[in-house]
Image 1: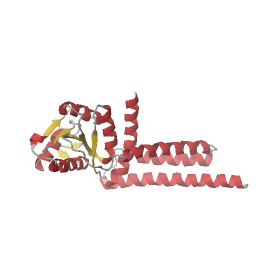
Image 2 (image 1 turned 60 degrees about the vertical axis):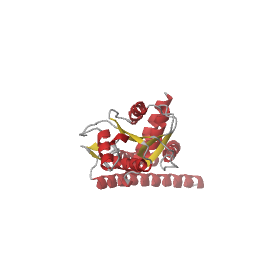
Image 3 (image 1 turned 45 degrees about the horizontal axis):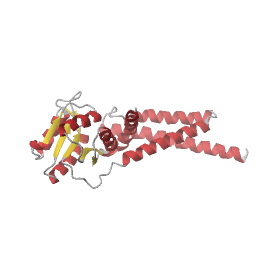
Image 4 (image 1 turned 180 degrees about the horizontal axis):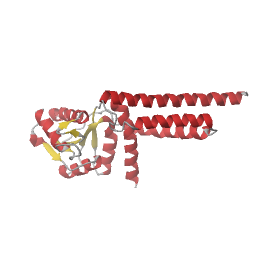
Length: 254
């Protein structure tokens, strides 16, 4: 075998090993999600076995065809697009020095019956800390009532913050929205002027898209206020957000 063929063979083998590792990670991560949450169909989780299968198929194609240059280019392009997008998402994940905001908008998330879920509780705890240290600030609690919810997300959020001692007069309920864009659009109507800084409270992975949408809706200065998320689900949410961000970018340009 010539040196060139040997190098090509080694390169192909390394790519196959890399793809196999990626596939194994996807299947293992899906198992971790299922075990941790005790259910197999949590938000976006079924993406992982599908992605694992896709990596396996790519590895098989590398082995049985001569399409490796095409596969290398496509995988490298996909990786570049993914890393660029995730960089944008990461840019809003850590709260910078907070601006003085007269208004916060707490973006809703699914509730179970009338009980706030982990993601929503984290958002509310973040809002509570700000409201407690800024007694002049008010909050719009934004979220309608979805399937399986006994009350609107806004009502569940209000109950949680009232129980923690926040004056109900400081809370404004927006209970019609079903998407992040509607959260921001309907909340804007309740606030009135959005020329001054407005705090956007959500889980860290969600804030880049939320602020992007706020900007497109005319918010002069949307200030990200990051809450954490379930540590096991962070990677899952980050990948899901990749697709949501691209949807928002395309919609903004159309």
